[in-house]
Length: 212
Figure 1 (cartoon, rainbow, N blue to C red):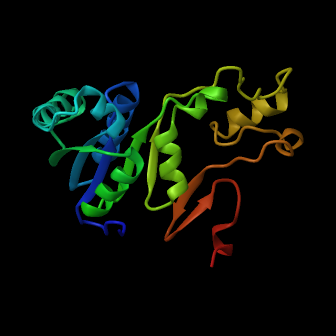
Figure 2: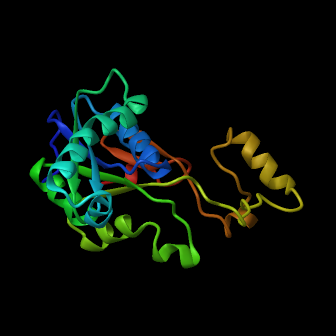
Figure 3: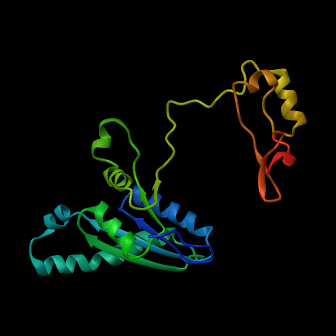
């Protein structure tokens, strides 16, 4: 599996469960697709064998049940698809989700595999997010993990407390490109970049003439 060169079709495989993790994965996949001129999207749902077997052990009943899943997956994915997308294919498989998704990624030359996770911490990690974790541990292809932001219990970095008059002056005179006065700059290292020919140069930083 190799990365698609410029102008080639970019293939995205989405592992979608029928829950919020699948919705998050589809949203991320569509967002990735927006930035590509040629995209092929594959949406896959993997039914664990243990779950599938719990429905019925009769072969004919299993076949009929399995036949309904592709349209279920289409109905689940439709609300997230946009007209700008190219081809969209759906795949339903039975088995262990992580290796099945990796096999699909190989079979369809996926450039990236997108999966969702609840991203919960603590004891819940023992069950939730197991597919995403297994894919990352396998290290077979690029994996994009879709999850909602979870910054509960964290606070943003204070610019300065109390407000530093020198910092305020620097932000005003630089138009917001610089945030810190010399004293506070020792604690905060940040800059923005601008293009200078073939190079990206830190604004207010290196002399472009020093860039080889």
